[in-house]
Length: 183
Image 1: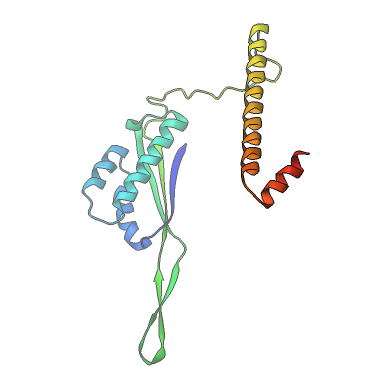
Image 2 (image 1 turned 120 degrees about the vertical axis):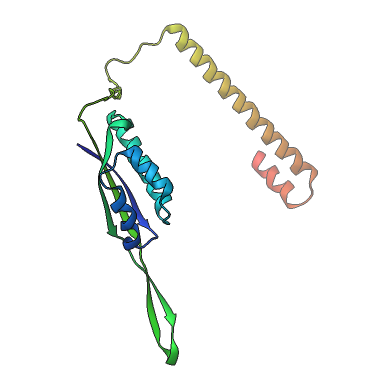
């Protein structure tokens, strides 16, 4: 079984990215991380992130041991090209292609099943087996709901009264509008 991690539309040319990818193919995850620390290429920081992501995917989703992982394959494909124009002599224009690449790192186990951890299964909620709530708890929730409703009513009434007072103090149009609404 294999676990992978992808990076799409990475703004480096695939030709430059493949140089780093060819160095990592077949190495264990630890060795690859050490190699990436000393490779002087523009795409190495992104490869480090991608490699960490693939290793953590394997560890968290499948319970694999990081010590038992190796890079099975690194695929670098061409992504979307950004097309730009450069003005030239005699009113001409030349095309500039800003290339992007799609990278995929595939990680597999060296020895299948070695050091594997059990992954906790997600709990399935049963509709029939809902936990019963005691009568005291039900009463408490009812009381708290009623208290909240009362507090909200008090706030609304205060706000309405405040608006009424403001309208009475002010002169003119607003005074008439609020007078009409209250009748």
